[in-house]
Length: 366
Image (tube, rainbow, N blue to C red; front, side):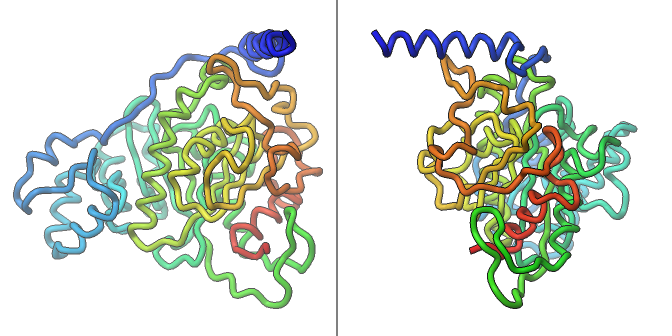
């Protein structure tokens, strides 16, 4: 009888989440963009350089081996003929993807994407379908000693990725803030549930990637309350990190904000991430950090005024994302966030959270 009562309470809370009285509001239902990139049919039909790796089935390491066997002329020809495929092909050489995506952005002719084609942008992925998806690199990915990936939550797409908004928020703003913070020497002391390694640390350069590579919820309605879009995005994140590995990048740190932490939770066991950091998280679709089945260190933080704290940590009939990652029972390492304001202030310069993020990104935390 007690078990039945708990089930009824959980169901009531789940309905409350969807109804909006606990923090969720209305939002549009989104169709997840999945599958290989546009232009895949023409790519498969191109036999000029022998069988090309199938974007739907070839592993990133197979893609890397294919490009390693081509000369410069063949690589250039494929970029010019199939920019949308090469630009989104995990495992393809990084410089080729930058050039392919510049061409793909220009080819859309859409003003909303025009800024992504600027010479100083390093666009590692671009897909114009739906609201658009994009991944942008800040720093030198090819020579980085450490790599971090920002996985954002609701309301983000290729248009809003770097839109004007409050500083240090949004995927690109968070990535820039983290990249800048990693260039600032960190004093010895306790950080994020551990401590900074004593003495000089040869951290090496850090590259940060803003990865808006999945269809995010719009608003905080049913799409944000269930796991459908996260389940579609998780394989894309896992493949993206496999692509980083295929080109020789170090194991990444995943910084997962809000609904992005749901994506990271579902992808965790399929990535080679060194650390997974959940911030402002509604849950990771797991009861404990161990349930994520990852070799990564798992971290979590939430600011005192973050409205996400008002969302019940329930899971019933697919609604809700489960346990609070900042709870002691979950078992994640804690990220200090006492001075964070609101739901999007975690990367604000001067905050304890950003200092902790920088230490984690540089591998300076024991």
